[in-house]
Image 1: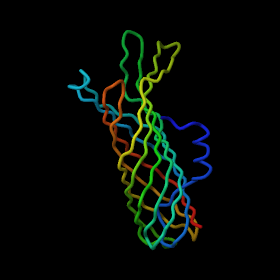
Image 2: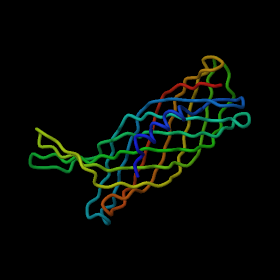
Image 3: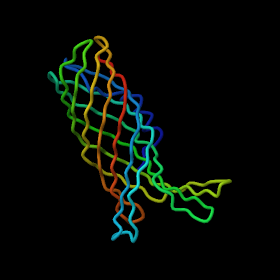
Length: 207
């Protein structure tokens, strides 16, 4: 299922960010933005025709974390993987573009090196992603276009990431990160292998 607008609004208001980098116990918030590469694969034996396509989309994320002991934290993140155009199946003057639109709610356990003002640190994390994907097809004849949903699916998958952060002062960090996850999603009764590679830059506030 897709998140409703009200659900997304609540998440954005109550989970404004998550932390990649902190060494003292307590809360931290992060907001970041980057891009997410969507990879879409269908086996030719299953579908009659094989696909191995990819597309990119803008990918913002917000979250919250709590450090319960030095260097270790739990994190909750809402990530919009965006809508990425995957492939065009049109012909004879008509374009039929298939796209994937995905959101993720991620829970992580994370380890980071000690935070020191004026210095870089590094982190790694592993967790579970609750993903929700809609596949759309947009038809266009060059003068007008129309979009229709052709399938949707949701589920859970493992997600892993790494990060590097720079502590500007006692409260603020800048952070660059990369996360990867993969899952199987059903589209028109055919199973598609989906992979997501998200690269982002953001800011962290430590309480």
